[in-house]
Length: 221
Image (tube, rainbow, N blue to C red):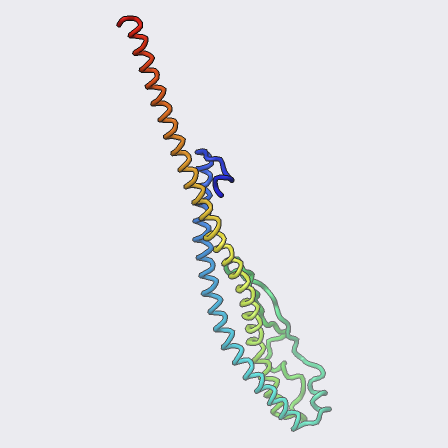
């Protein structure tokens, strides 16, 4: 109960009003943040769906090309062709801040810019299906990285949305109503005290008037 938690003074009333103002402003900001996070989260979910379908389809295509390459060449030729890659590929990881969420950014980097460096073998003893499979995987890598980036971003945003939702609910259903109840209680008590003080002053004034009248009568005035 508000009455058992606070002392009804004007200083406490000012404190609770400031608390209510801050909580109301914070509630609005957090709701705006939650709504924007939800908007961006849904955009990422839609992008994730499209990317995953595309990546899975193209992976099937690359795997099919590898199956055909294996059928067209012996295991020894394939193993030798893929044993020593010419190109070196690595992933550069950075982050960007989206509504206080550190979103990962994955970028493909290669040692050299030449597209032909993805083929670590000569063309004399290998099939065109192997060339196709290697090309498919090389073209697919940026989308694979983007898919990983989007899925991780979705998980991070979902966690932040849930945290923000709990804070909004705490402000909306606990802190703001509590401050409002305390303000109402203090205001009511201060009004009661003010009325009681006025009544006492009026009684004192009546007593003083009555006393003055008695004195005047005693002096024969």
